[in-house]
Image 1 (tube, rainbow, N blue to C red):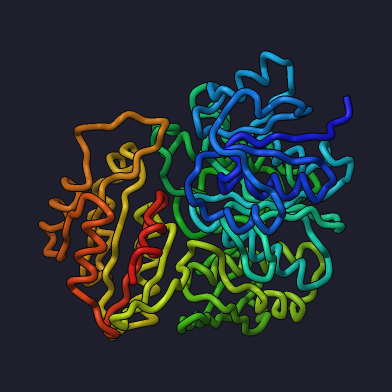
Image 2: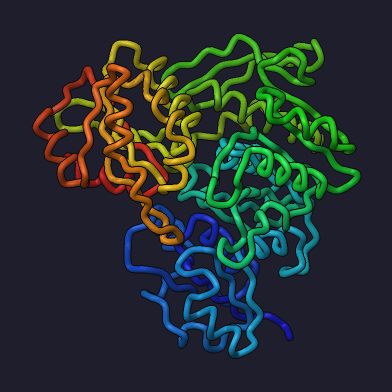
Length: 469
């Protein structure tokens, strides 16, 4: 049967929205459903002319030829998915669907896949690669797990070019019924691994299991392709020993095939030099801040060199990149004069890097971090690491844990316990249960222009920005 209409269950999810946009641009009729709350993807869907149906009802899948869903909103137990199975409508998860769009199986358009995996940095790196390709006239297809991306003007696109750039997520396909890592569905020509650090304890019982998952992703790369991998960090060593394909390494270490030198971080700008086996490729610059973003850019440089793009054209393409939604995003200046940023960081390493970057940019300002822990399982598993993650903040405010709908509350861990543990290090930390209390506190404190306020976390903490005057 020829597919004409695709229905997306949970269409506002950051992994689902780009797929919906791709499907519509590819000529499919698209419908979708989700809860009636603000999402960072709302702008992308509105621009694409896709209006989600509110709530989940079995009638929503009527007349659909294909249903695409995710592990959220009840996963396979969602009433729309149950009805699709009852009606024998083909059902794909987000992880499977992104792979089928990437290979052209759903669109009958052959593409070369570029997949970016890693515990941190995959969204930014994917967006950088897509930006360079677009700036050089390649019109790539791309699926990037965030909201609106400047210059790309979306988070998803079905391009006329032969490249399809996609994030490759290490999380489970459907956490209750299919724990296959979503990245395993993708079989790209070029694969990138930005780093490997322990995360998702609800899926991976140990770092060893997570390393095995990344190895399987690497082994799925086309035999004629390449693995571009960050050499910094000990967790890549086992993979490098086992993987038999072509490997290109990068990092700060001069042992890497490509390495960074003289990284200079400024406000909304980072400059760095790139070397390839001792050969100087010159100075590069990006219009975002942070050493971690210089590393993301280096991975993007290597991928685009593999595609035959010249160094000069890569440099020009990188300048078009201006960040992504919720990645150290400047939101506004508060009426009191303080600068307000928002960041998706929810893992100890990400938190450290974001705060270190803000401290480098604003060395004379006091950083107030408002952190919302994400999931009981992550907070518990990485509890000790979280304690030392906020050293570069002047003051830390911790709100209640944002619990995944897939987990049950764990009384042995809480934001209050985390705040108490951090306070023993001498850090000025305050536990405030809800957003209203945070808003009242910030407005009473009225941080002036000597302050930077950053909301941080993978839950709905970004909504706080709208209520801060």
